[in-house]
Image 1: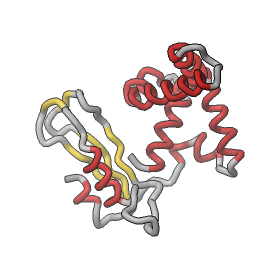
Image 2: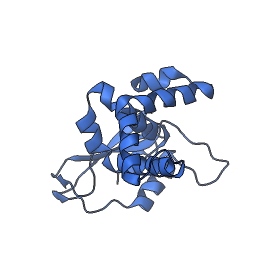
Image 3: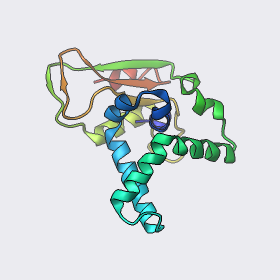
Length: 174
């Protein structure tokens, strides 16, 4: 959750074939990949480029794994005057000054994640805003290390909070 973290996840997905991290990336971002391929497939069907949703999904997946999506994304960034340096080396993007880990207080299965609570924490740390006149901190966000349905141990890191707001970082992990 958070502007840069979401862009970084998309970059990881678009470059997973070339990076050799395909299984790891698919495991981490399974839901995002699935919904994106389905939406792309629906557009291909509507444009009459694919006869069925399944054919469209196969086409979209081929474009993703072949690097065509990454190439088009780079073209779009350039066309809008963006810096390729940031997307080609996402680890060089400025990081938030402060971070804190959210630790599991007990062992067990993660049954759900409260999206409203996560959104409110996002606002608290600067990744979102209460009103249009507030600024957004593009480096702020929440990186989840787990997904619903996973088993976690007591003391395991569930998420990492990133922010420029030192005064809220401790409260954001509760």
